[in-house]
Length: 170
Image (cartoon, rainbow, N blue to C red):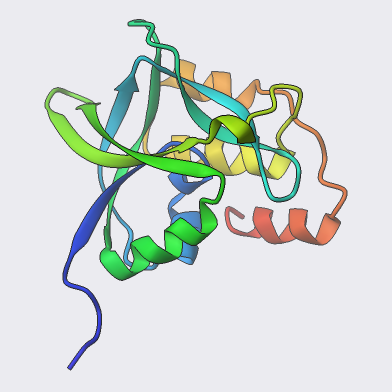
């Protein structure tokens, strides 16, 4: 008899978890369901990561013209607990998302904790490469992908980590 939880959870991914390979390394049960946008939010790279570089945040602006694009994954409840372990410095919120092509979907999203934001930080190049790879995989709007690729980055001084992270998409 399996001890796996039959419960599934929908998670809206917009940062490095957009990349299917990255997400499945973290949570093997992850299955992409739909591409969607979170209105009134803007993608910013200002969340303080454990490596002291900037990570992605779906920052709430309340502006009607702003939207963060991403993918809704379905994953098993046991894997959700594992994912929570990677998402330190974020809190969860239930959100309503606009699906590409119409429709709405409910999901949970990780948003940066206010005390974990530092706009002076830059993301490592490998991190932005993972976000861009995921955006391409899911066919996010070309102008949105271009904005991700235009984000200013810094090189990771840990060359082994850089190589390890880049190997996910190569």
